[in-house]
Length: 236
Image (cartoon, rainbow, N blue to C red; front, side):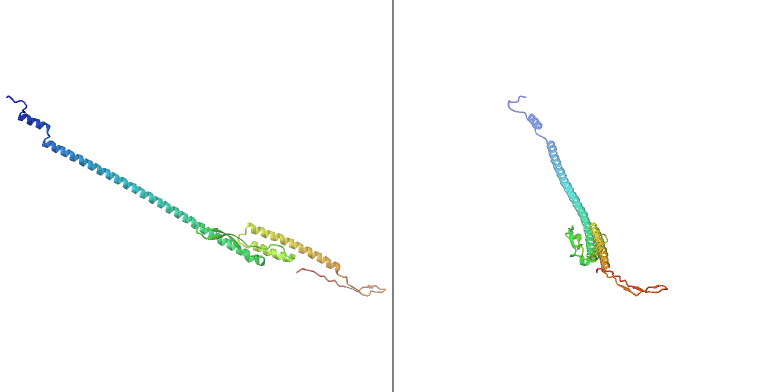
């Protein structure tokens, strides 16, 4: 068959069209593939979102746990500090009672020789209150005008110094000093007494009464009367 130039047979054209254009089946396969790709992409996005959500949730949970742990530690520290503060306050309260009782014992026994009331030094506790931690009572320890008065005074001072249940080192030193001054006063008193006695003995006139002595041939009769007065001088 002669085919005019430039004219393509119908069958050949049809064949060409069939080989260059996708069939309906191929279109369906391509569409399904595209849908699957879209679904996979969407699924992957959801997974990524879930992972991000889980990651953020995990971070938040971890942060919450850290905050709880911090709060628990802070509470524990606060409880421990509160317990220590309470123990410190109890110690300060006990010390306050001991100091006040100690100084009151001094003051009660010092009597007229105390030169004022008790004074205290203070320590501030963790609760803001002040507690007595030390104290003193001023006492006159000088000698008096006479040994007797000094002896009496030093005895009172020694009693006052040793009056508390637990005398301090300073208290014992004051008691020792008072004992020494008392001994010196007693020595002075003895010396004064001895000197006074000697002086009185020297100044006392001798009184002597003599009776007439009669002598006979047969013997001697003596009638003598002696009178002695003893004086003891005491300074009061």
